[in-house]
Image (cartoon, rainbow, N blue to C red; front, top):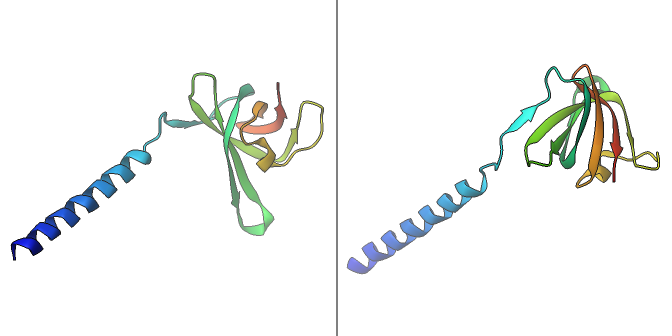
Length: 117
């Protein structure tokens, strides 16, 4: 009976450590802020691309940018956004991950994204 109780306690502790480790990994280093009321140019490194399809063939895509201080911003993309590299060749959203970019923002949406050196 004592052996069974000891096994139950050990398994319970092991499970609790697994869940404790999982919760630590889910915390963000910096809060993510969205670009609201911003127009102009934003420079940062693309950390993630969010692609969301909506009905009627429309989509809402966004870039997650990290500035030099590590703060992140979510920049919604206009449906007609131009994405180019530093030699003006067209790129896809997936090709932007990890690259430093300059984003032209008009009416709270990115209208042009260009890779910078």
